[in-house]
Image 1 (tube, rainbow, N blue to C red):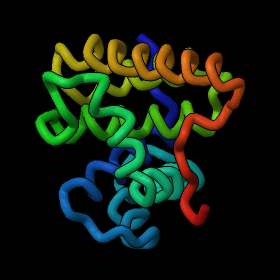
Image 2: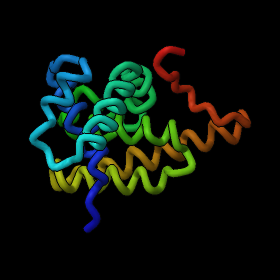
Image 3: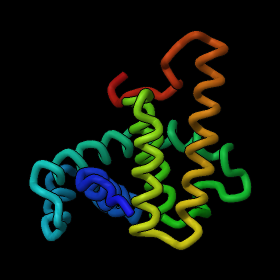
Image 4: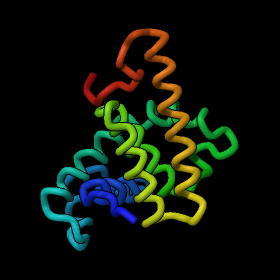
Length: 151
């Protein structure tokens, strides 16, 4: 089994902290992750990515919720919804890497979540990719409707 890259693991941990009511300040999140195995650079990259996700999370959630109507994000385990948000944002920023992103998300689910989570994560992200591809084919655009913070 492959192991997800350390920066993704750090981003997931930061998203978990944020979702549980943690302070959305980079320094505090970075300090909270100091005990992790990730390098300082990976922790910083993960925290930065998590904060970008947190800032535009509502938009990501609006895109993800219809993909699992029986399990909307608010009913999902914190780790599963954090993995979905992480992967959805990464697929937005690097759409050509969607296969790698989904594979890494499945690895995170195997490492941190329930036995059923990898299959669930794979299904939702596969639907997300197909939906985005369908929208792109119809519009000819590459923008997936996700607004970057500050836009």
